[in-house]
Every structure is written in structure tokens, then in C-alpha cells.
Image 1 (cartoon, rainbow, N blue to C red):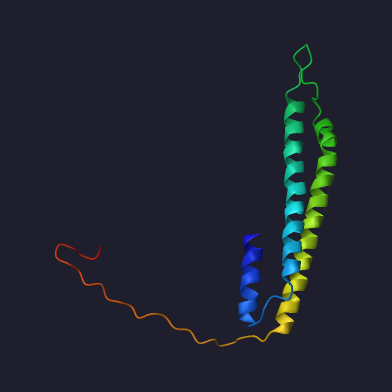
Image 2: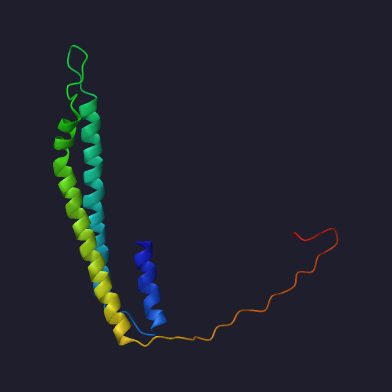
Length: 133
């Protein structure tokens, strides 16, 4: 989200215009948040499910789910939820691309912006100092 925020801040300044739509930025934020929640929470549940399946033993001391494929098939719905969250996240990226594209089209690129910096002040060493203050 930090990268998206930087793009939303930087692109209007490069093209000397305002964002096309702040509502689309908010929409992107909520779509991103929902997609991330679906993605992350389903992974947590998949990990917990697999952990607890690997800790179940029969009275004889063997693993109840000794076959790895049983744990994989048990967490398949969580992986489908993860894919759903990734698709929601991707939809949010397309909303951002649309918004930034419209912003770029509405502005004009500032190719050579004048820039200046304050003059470098020479540090005068005081008595007892070398190069470090």
C-alpha cells in the first residue's frame, strides 16, 4: 500500500494536475483491504488447520493424518479463498491504473522542472573537535 500511496502522491506532481478521482482512490483502498484480509486470514486458518492435523495421534501413537495429501485436501477451501482475495486485490490494482491513467491524460508532463538546494554551510571545528561534532 505504501507503493500505491507514493504513486497517488507522485503522478499528479509529475504531470502538474490533480488526481482524476479521490473516490476511486478510496475504492482502491477498500478493495485492497478486503483482498488482503481474505488472502491473509485464509492463510492463517490453513496453517492452523494443517498444524492441528499434524498433531492428532491415534491411541497407538501414530499420526491420524499420516498421509500429507489429507492435510492438503483439507486446506483446499482456504486456498480457494486465498485465490479469491488475490483476485480482489488485482481488481484494486486495475482501479488504480485506470485512475492514474486518467490523471496522466488530464495533465502535462513537466520535463525539466527547475530545482535548487540550499548552499552547503562549511562546518567550522571548535577547539577540541576534529571532523566530528
